[in-house]
Length: 364
Image (cartoon, rainbow, N blue to C red):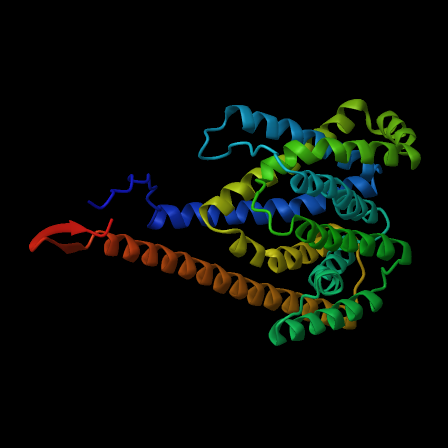
């Protein structure tokens, strides 16, 4: 007799106008928070609180405390902490703080020395940096379509940066270092993890990697004299104002992770990744209305080329990932079908002849 597989619990996918409205609202919130966070950081690092590394450390503290709250209070279907049982995962976790300090730490530091528009334009170079790093380390090549968009992205970024009247070499180098840190973090993590199947939830990363990041960020902040600058900011702006800015930044940092997680659970990280170009372009556009920035026709042309190439590259990346996911599902479906066929063959009735008598049996 064929064994009956236990019924698996399925969660019906939400459909209709309510689901579409919820996803649209979350997408708007995430994009608004991403752009708003960039504008907020540029504002405080250029004026009332010129301590980007120290503030980045406080963001990490807020994210850690928020992750602990989610861990202890959320239902298992939303988040369940992933236990760490192998050295490869611990290696990955140790890589995350180093990549974070180069990526986010240097990005925030660059906002002291460059405009938000140039910062976002330089950050849009990340797909090129990741492609080059993955080719050097892993030998990974890009499809012709993505290679063309990457070439256009390089041309647009170079044109937009070099033609900008606000160009500053120090800010450019620091922001470029943050892009390199982001690329190394992504590629090296994938390379070290190899074939391991452990997947870390975003809140796992916040639980395990934020405290090591703080250990790196606070000494760095102290060595740059930011503690003294913090004291001067408190004297000038007032303790309440400085504390309010720090708490607001920490809240933005944690809620951005929270809303992004909910959005990805309702859709997919692939779809969210496509919004990167739109968020970058929106931040550049808004920055010209919020901050005093200069621009030329050539720099605007470069920005437009870079943003169009960024969005096209995101689209091709999404298409490749969706095709990969579809292929994996097809392989899994074929395996299930083959297993079922073998089980059916084992249950087929057979006739056994013994001493001139025939009996009915099965192959099992």
